[in-house]
Length: 434
Image 1 (cartoon, helix red, strand yellow):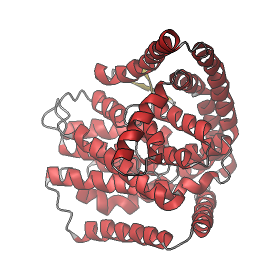
Image 2 (cartoon, one colour; image 1 turned 45 degrees about the horizontal axis):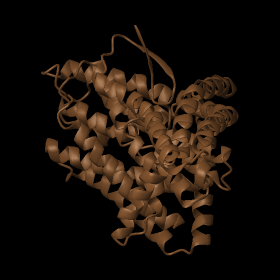
Image 3 (spheres, rainbow, N blue to C red; image 1 turned 180 degrees about the horizontal axis):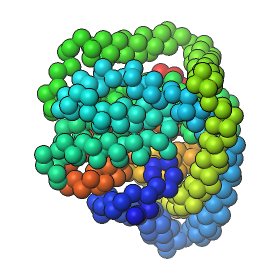
């Protein structure tokens, strides 16, 4: 057995997962690079500019960042326990199964190579539904089970099959209904309305997922012009277009009031709905909540080392002046094109997200700490963080679990979905908060 940490910090145990070494080492090299580049730039400032404050500033940032990381993790405990408890009620109350049944006609069309009635269909539905509800503790094992079942159908055991690639891109596109952890971080860092990014994230992740589905369908020649898919995708697109048009007709104050109210009403409806589902299922709702809350507590504790590691590295990188040089250069290039460049300061989160969830989380926290949770940059960083998933990590874990070496076009399609998410996030953030 081998111990592996999943994208949200849960410890999982899987038999002999062979991860591609290049993917596993990426975050290690990035983390080292933060310190090495910061040290080199600081030395240049000291030697050539006589800046004797840069090294004290860097050392101060290590202590300040460590303290910030611990305080954030500690503050997460209560709210994360609350939401994990609510999610557990929904899981035991049959909400995940209900979503699986609801999505069945659509997923049958997206996976035409999977025989009708094959057990893998249930695992795929359960994984996607669990991801949509933010049930990562359940989603990852279900995803690995689905990959094993798809591998049984795969004629070329070292090459990714069409259903595998569609499944992976649906996971990496990050379709999530409830971005709980991001709202918790915003609350911890003093956001006036932590839920104000709920609808922007929902819209952005929709564009990411739609892009992934269309690109994969073109590669695999899946016909999306059938009644089921046209009704589903067309209806979803019309709804999103109506939402965007409606908000574009409002002034800033009205938009903020409507989006915040809608987000809070929807979230409260989900909480109440989960509880009612649990009651109708005749489960002990209180015990289910306690069980989930315990997982939330352990999760909050487990993320402390990872948050400390990345925040300290980013803090040193920023204190040395390297971050300002990087962002400043990019901002000047964008400004030279005559385009507003305030979104550039949030790009570290977007660039880190395909590589590492913990790294992107650290970038998001750093952006909110530096610019403010309610600043344009802080909000855009949150939207970047919530709109896609860790593309390379998911590909490594899922393909590695079944020994796939030839991933075909999975990486390029996943990155195209990420690119669509970045463009959509910037546009939607300007619409809501610009």
